[in-house]
Image 1 (cartoon, rainbow over the protein chains, first blue to last red):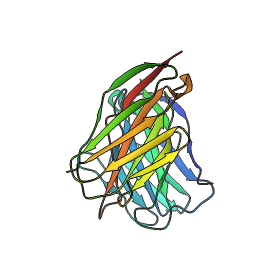
Image 2 (image 1 turned 180 degrees about the vertical axis):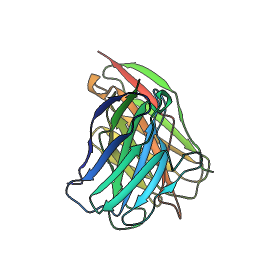
Image 3 (image 1 turned 90 degrees about the vertical axis):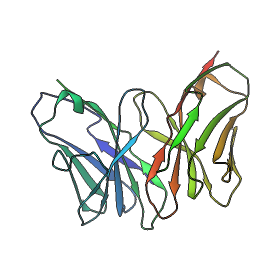
Length: 116
Length: 112
């Protein structure tokens, strides 16, 4: 149980285009989803926290207009990288937690984004 | 602000040896600490979770300890195998917070 999927697993796009990444909880309802970014040989950095039906909370330094997050249902959150640039190339990982505060987070397999 | 550090950044050991990975955190008011494994280009696999009231957790060849007062945790791997090669991350959740703060990771290589 507690499986989280991400789609796509890899994406290559041209600079200036927008890319949408989906994060789904397959067998549980996720009231909270988290989006992380990981640059090569570095650790995971939290970008934003999204709660179903409300606006996402972004970490300091993360542009909310560039990284649009939607958590429209209890099983799906999307991250849209708008007007992507090469510096946005990274590994994006989502996680999902169930109903209660500080509940265990279950991680997706990640999405590799390469912006040319 | 919580900071999590892992030393060493990289470690290579011969197959069969026991080894210890270290994790330290600056704020001892944590809710729990978790150890993860990450294979290259992959997501995270949770290995062990220790609640703040616990001192250790065991799963197979893995044993994680927690000393909250000193801000330290260790992950002990017994009888290492080449399949254990991966990056190991520790992460903490602070009290009153739902966010995971990740350590810098230790890249482990087991030499056959």
